[in-house]
Image (cartoon, rainbow, N blue to C red; front, side, top):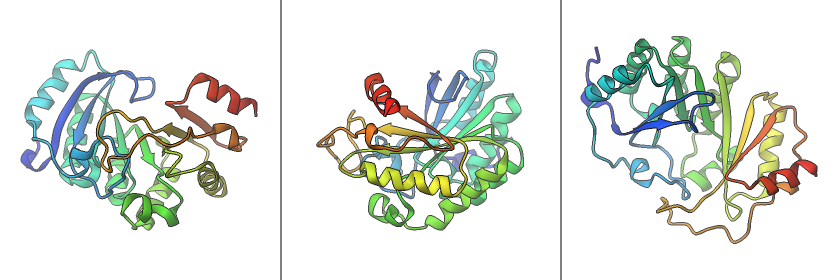
Length: 244
């Protein structure tokens, strides 16, 4: 039983997805609040702490009813680990029998480690926004030592995880992404690294426009000891880059 469900900043529920939890049918729980202010963020209300709370009890009732039909639950946001109450909810969801995926920006390593150590997390997707020295310019947040700690925790955890970068050619160019991949290679990263092309679909936190040019995958060195994958790029772009 949750001790203080009213302290959990749950604001929305996506009832079904096949896209957000690898190899699983899932639903998504959305939490409000975030430490970062990324201009390209597609969830500006959540980033700023907005949204009307929904009932945690009703959500758990929904999950119990749907358990035969769904494999997993995605915790997303905003930053889902911002509130300590989310830890309780993860445990409750795991008790029902779901696999749990955490979407995080990496700013709460202690909370991430607690859940991993308890064995209640099955998959983590963590943002890698930019080279660490550029984080404050891109996100308004400069506690990159916390991100590094989260990265270290994931590297040592045995939990399946991915890193992901949203690319907008006017904010992060090909040279910058190359430096980020160099960082991962230097730190012996062996997971999946996803490059996600920015898509203008509705309001963003910084009201930014489409990039002035298309991000050119063919300019990247993709011969890495980790797997580079792609979202929101065309098949032609990907094939051209892989041929290069």
